[in-house]
View 1 (cartoon, one colour):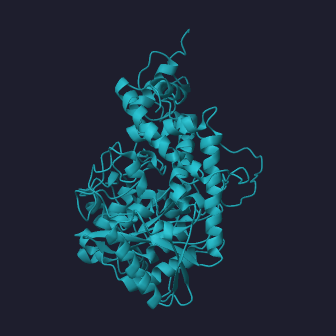
View 2 (spheres, chains in turn yellow, green; view 1 turned 120 degrees about the horizontal axis):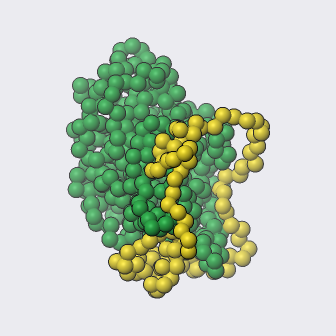
View 3 (cartoon, chains in turn blue, orange; view 1 turned 45 degrees about the vertical axis):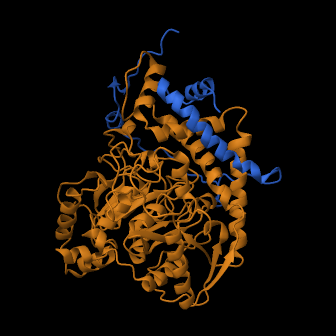
Length: 96
Length: 472
């Protein structure tokens, strides 16, 4: 069972501010899911099995290092919740 | 009018090419049907005229298409079913969508989906659930449930979706249509809002295998904007096979036994008999590590999503919540912007990647992935295809599985092994069980799309499924 502190720790890493109700519910739900995914333990020692991160063999891809036009700044800022002075405006990181 | 509804996309394209059908008439017919949709299959429908910039002399013939919400489409809402991307209209269009438009299909609608493609029922959409046209009290499957329901209901002639662990094949099965997940890398992922990058792959939803081939032909291709894209080694051909002479089918015990509803198994076995009559050999086989695929998948996919979804911080696009400072704004935005399932997966993924746990979880899951890929390698020495039911059951009631994440995850049991191995697989309609559609899955080696489509075509002709009831 994941403790309240463990859920809070992971939530902090994931930049999630959870409500008390969510912390309560999630510690149960996450524990259930983790218990279940741990069934991969049944496969025993996999020291000699290489991990697969990419299934189809690919070669590295290179391109010419040639300048190309970028997106117009205004077009990109169009989607921003708060744009100012040609950039993204955000709250102050704070003193602490 | 109902005559237009009876046409497959390929038939409609052929009529437009021949000058027997005016493209604007087809556009208006489907636009009006899509605008009148009562399944909540769409998040956005174009209410304007047939886009003239699309050249209907291309192979897709001006036949309008529905696009899963998570494909970036310039100037059109592209929100991945999430509140955190509310009102987001991207400045560019995903390569797969651009290729479809260049081949002559105008975008009619954006289809509903589980938030960030996380789910198997489309109930995790921030824009409400989609209903199944065969029974409106039931789910259409997911995560591409809107794309599947719309094609089944005839509110779009065809559509595209994405499949990470079954999100094309399972909803296609539950809605009684064709869904094809291509080999990983066949279609560019550029502009697809990412869920789990090593698994995500785009593919078609269609009424039949000919339409699926036609659409895949347009979508597939190498793309300089996605360095993992490979295209397909040979052009996609329209399928013509009417028999299965000499085709060797492997039936894995692990995907055809416990946990599969009896009605689904009956339909599966009947189609195996049909396959034999068409000349195929059918043999039982094993994919010994497949039962562990689901657990490995539910570590790999959340781990990758926790990384991919780190970008949603309220700064550059979409939704932003107020916060006392910068960190407070990030955490509040994510708390309010993400739904329950997305939070669950982000937390599991973050946990699985966190210091001290990486080797036991993510690292080990990647090794299981190797074992599953090897199981398939061995199968290809004896078989042309691996076949199974697509989903363990028929469409379930809305709300039946939302309270139990593990029960929901089990929907992906038969589709996840192919995803982990990057293999192509198709689901075709395989009759009804309790009045609801059942899917038959055919998986093959990497880049065997043409052979899969041919085998699926032969079976499709023999099964003779009639999906018109859902289009009423």
